[in-house]
Image 1 (cartoon, rainbow, N blue to C red):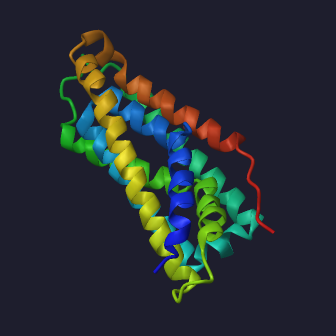
Image 2 (tube, helix red, strand yellow; image 1 turned 180 degrees about the vertical axis):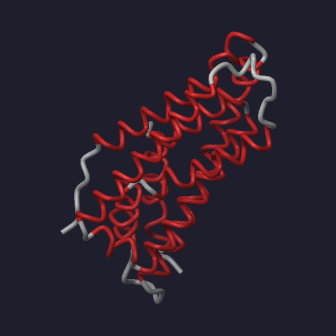
Length: 214
C-alpha cells in the first residue's frame, strides 16, 4: 500500500522527530515520574490514541480542510490552552497528597492521564498541522494506492513507532518514579508537579507559532 523505497527515509525522519523533546514527551515523562509506570503507560496509550485519530482525519482530508482556516486553528489553540490550564489548576488545588484521607486508585489516575493525553493532543493545532504537512511528503505516485490510503499506513507506522518509543521512555523513568513515590516529601508535591506541567504545556501552546499551509 506504500512505496517501500521511501521507508528508509521515512523511518529515519520518524526516529529523528521522536528524539526531539516536545509536549508529548514532557507529559509522559512527568506522568511516569509523578505517578509511576502504570500511569505513564496509559498516558502513552492516550497519546497513541490521539495520533490514530489525527491519522484518520488526515487520510480523509478533514485535517487539511481545518488547517486551511486560520480562525479555526486559533480557536483550537485557545480551547486547548484553556483545557490544559484547567487541568493544571485542578492538580494544583488538590494540595498535599501525603496527607489526603483517600488517595485516588492507580486505575483512576491511569484513566485520567489517558483522557488528558488524548484531548491535550487533539486540541493542539500544531499536532494537526504536523500530520497535514509531514505525511504527504512520503506519498508516492508509483503505487496503486491512493494518497489517503498511503497516509493512513504511514500514520499508523508513525504511531506504532511513537508508542514503542514512549513505552521505552516510561520503562526508563518509571523506576525512578516508583522510588520517588515511596518518599513522603515527594508525595506531598506530586500533584503540584503535574499541575505545573499542564500550566507549562498551556503556555507552550499559547506561545507556539501556527503556520497555515498555502
